[in-house]
Amino acid sequence: MDRSKPVFWRDSRMPYVELRQVSDGRTVCYAPHSHAQWSIGAITEGISTFCYRDERCQVGAGDLVLINPDWVHACNPIDNQPWAYLMLYIDTGWLTALRTRLGLLEQPVWQDIGTAVVSEQRFYQGYCQMADCLLDSQIALPEKQTAVIEYLSGLLNCLAGQYPLPLEKVPQALSDLAGYLDENATEDIPLAEMCLRTGYSAGYLIRSFKQYFSLTPHAYQINRRIQRGQRELKRGRPIAEAALTAGFTDQPHFQRTFKRMVAATPNQYRQSLLR
Image (tube, rainbow, N blue to C red; front, side):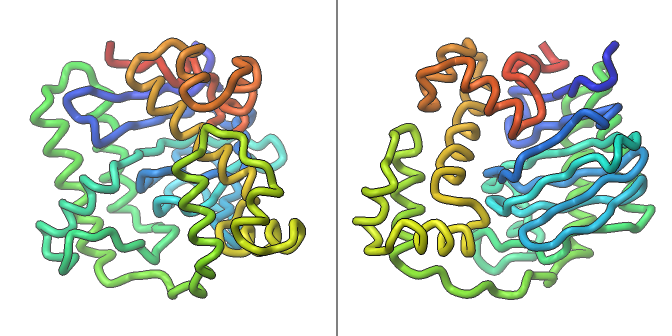
């Protein structure tokens, strides 16, 4: 088996979680991107560079990285040194409900978590045990469900109250533009139209948007298209159909962009260990 190829685990009976495993990440390189889900990863071997919004640090075996929904990030190898990792993606709505049931949120509304890196062995070991449980085809569904809930409940209780420092409020014009790009991610929206909507010049719009969203308007829109393509592929859609639905009229362009941002080909992502 090619250790550099990612392995994905998902189960339609647990649609709120998805696990990714990479055994040799030396050729796994990500462009800056974000996920709609909250995600938590474990570095299981070696070291890598973790870029998270404006922060940059080195993480190694035994570390956990925690990534809030829509926070731009990338995690890449260092000088071709070996590294391996597991990454669990968790539906934000499902996790919000869990945090509310645990009494960690007063209202069932998502709140970002301030902690980005956890280095405590008990949480790392617990994570690996949970991942092994999910990957084991001989373990029954109720045990997998219990493993996920018990692990996350323990971790989230320890992280309770650790919220990130509030960011500067996004100007209304940029917030409205981001919402418009979300709703029309599959459409080619010219920069000139974005300028008209915001009243900004092209250069100022690009700089300002990147300041608040960590991506240029175009990169933001492409990120949303890839997220949509992922959802279609998880539903079992053919790659060509997923590309069109996500707003790519050129399937090779979709495949290249998908590989650059997801560090997996559409076909690799579409295939799950659980058939």
